[in-house]
Image (cartoon, each protein chain N blue to C red):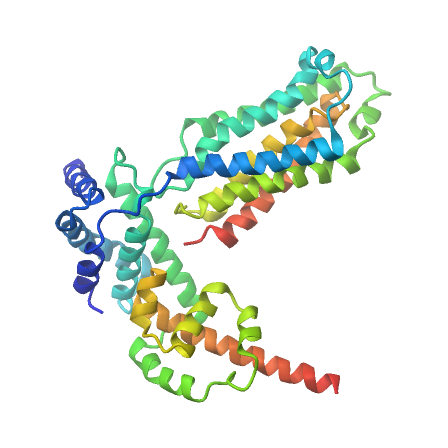
Length: 186
Length: 213
């Protein structure tokens, strides 16, 4: 373990000086370890690779939170734990057991029969959280790919698709409730 | 996307963007919030008359020293909580001494006060000022701190937020104590503590809301 900490610490320090090769090696060596943690924490085989990628993205986005004098493994494991717990939680809540490819196919329909097209989309977008609103704008309105948006927001492609899908469902619900309130007003 | 491709993509950008360290940002956040809180303090409350004489009294001095100590001991713990895999550290455990001292002072004041005076001292005359004012003074400090902490990555956002709330509450209470004329621990050990706990609750809420990543 100390051995690994020294090697990874060395690689990360070099990465911080801009050595892409050292950084690639660190991420490559960390990925299988992360996979083991994720598998143990999520308790199922489905979606493991998505979570592993989430963790790698988080490691990348939060790499400044590692101090060069700290051991690497507790830091890395904590990120893997946090992201696994997060993924398990949102899976339990959203029931996102649907394979991502199915969702991707349905996304085409979503943007075609946009439930919010005829309304003030901006107003509806104000009702949902910032990140979801940005994703809907980028994917649904400006037509960017989930990968591009993900790279910008520090999310995996799969996570962007799921977030987009959920946001559209929420917007549809919001549009529905607005109908109801308008009707009751009349 | 395959994991190997993702790694290759990430590795194209090895060095983190140069930016002020987490501690520095948090320091600036607390400072900015503190300036607002102090401005608010002088605009609305102001120092109590004859402050130096009162500060010479050890029991009175404690109502300023204890919350300041709480903040000083917990701010490092907040920074540790904002980094993945870093233990809170010994200062967090030492901070337990603050509530212990508050309880001890309360018991001492209870024992030494005349039985007829206890309730009067406990209730005091300024609960409706003290309880809302401390959280209000803490708000800008907590906001500055939480804003800075968003760059961190707390494994337990709620705990990190609550610790930030305790620290911000401690700083706000330190300031408020320079205005407050209630000098019995029966009053301040109770109501200051309650106000600080309110801020800790706000911090926990803010942590859950703003410190997730």
